[in-house]
Length: 112
Length: 120
Image (spheres, rainbow over the protein chains, first blue to last red):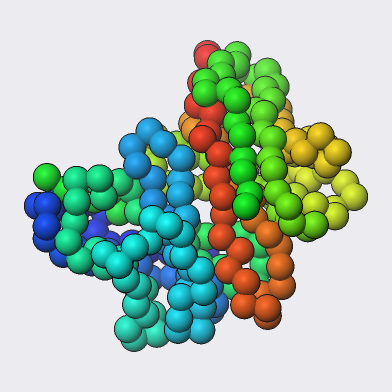
């Protein structure tokens, strides 16, 4: 069964550094999402991406965040200058035309 | 804006018994979708069940069923015959089920979750 993959599984970075989280959505899917889950808290929507552009974003998704689909398969989330409060699990998800969003296994980002 | 409330931070159930996890929602959208996801300790998000707001019957998927009461704006998850492997965090979520062709993103809004522990 096709699945969403994410790399790396765990990323440790120093405050102020740039990080890029990578996702490979399911190949025929059309919508792509990033969500964030701070440890022990609920999953929060960050951004959705459709037709090579952002379709919606939350208040969390400020100028420090950007997304890109550089080559038709990868879907990346970049944080330009990480802060301690960016430490969280980041989930990528994708959907074709049905209702179920397929989630990746997540990347745990630790900012020190 | 959409909001999901899960009032049970933790629940315990004896193996082989049924358990109900509560979820209430608030949305101004005339149509919407309701989801339940399971998150085991390993961290991944596993889709369990979906209910559309205009679906006439309650959704069922194996041992999972959704007790949908639209007038009360509740979408409780019922797990029958609990197993030890059901121990996990369970999240309720809502999304507007607008047609993909409209360009709507249909992002999920999650509740705070319920930690279910199945006792042997």
